[in-house]
Length: 556
Figure 1 (cartoon, rainbow, N blue to C red):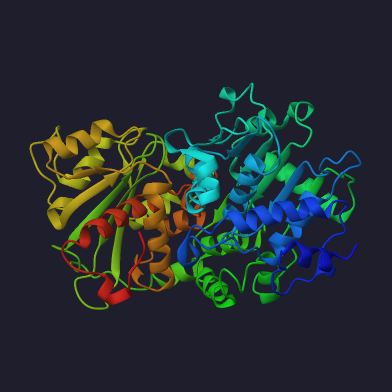
Figure 2 (tube, helix red, strand yellow):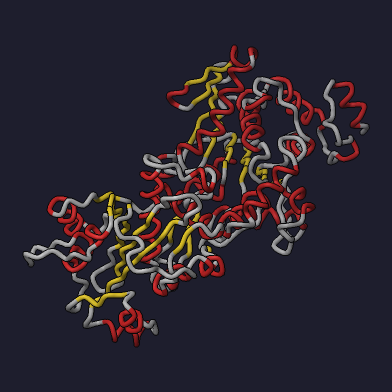
């Protein structure tokens, strides 16, 4: 069949750069045209300079929609029941997903259609739904026929008794549904396979043309995850290793062997390049990522769809060592403003107290002092067991062995404030006596007793810092930039260096990071305390003096 004549007759223009010869041979091109006409004439872009403009399909979108809706079985029903789309971020997958959802709601001819946007959480599930709702508002034909119920995250088609709704991963509440179409957004973020199983198992008997439409970027290596299983199947089907005529793989992914610095690889994973964004934008992303090991992993994952390990070693130790070459002269930091971080371990393990000193003049570096504590009676046992030179660090003054077989919190309290409930004297060399100690950030887990005394009895401003992506990611990324840029000095503390070398991070789907204590090879307590102290310093220091004059803006 001459697709060019057919498309010309139907009034559908091919996107620039795509010819009729590039289209897959399908059994029902009329159905392809019906779906593409619906999307390109009734759906609109919803953001940026194209907001409100009719949906202009890009070549990659036009191609897979043509095959998805036009390849039919002998009974006239669609051949493909699953379409797996893996594509890099910012390539327009949310908008094409929303458009497919609206077509399945009121353009597919299904009576009592149930269309669901499914994702790991309510916020993510609402993203595609919100785009679809705006498309309805932007078009008079759609808005006359469909009703958007924002409070329930629903779009209703009373003509066919159908609806489109957003669902999140609380799968136990979703039994009894009868989906005609499921839009799985960011499948890699699903915590387990429960929602997938509930929505896809058994419902195909009641729906002759159920469509499972997956839109995702790459995740982390986890061979047990539902994303990994579906991805591997799609790859095998595309290669012809596995035969499954019901699955349409749409894969824009780099291979593990590909060079992430190769611009041809960038184009391979980003078919919207030159339309939605430019190649220069990816160049800028790569340049920034090259300076940051975490961002580099995110670049590979989100820009090239190369799966990465969940845990990544974080600190470039050559850069770290460059920031530890100065010698601290006695009295250099006395009287300076300082922000503290206190990471209290279990009473048998390493405890860290870190001070961060903001710069007081142009081009001065941020300064870091830290001290560590271990129980005296168990120190040598730990040296033998852990093969770590705690005794040498103690002898050199980097670590204090507190009396007894557990960490003495009262001793640590006295090091910070100078006060102790067991003595009428005050330690003159405590942190609060030597420096202007503005705040001490701490992890509240197991720290109630000592922090209450420090704040209520000793007058130290204590700031709770719960461990998580929201609190830890901004100062972690800022610390890394300071280290890479040589803007911080830690005076070569060997215990802190050991902690820095041990530190690995756990990223989330948005590229935020936090320390992964449970996955670190050894102790990372000093780095956790440093990150908390720096976070408070960056938060508070801007109220007294702008640090951005020296090093530019850091996004928090």
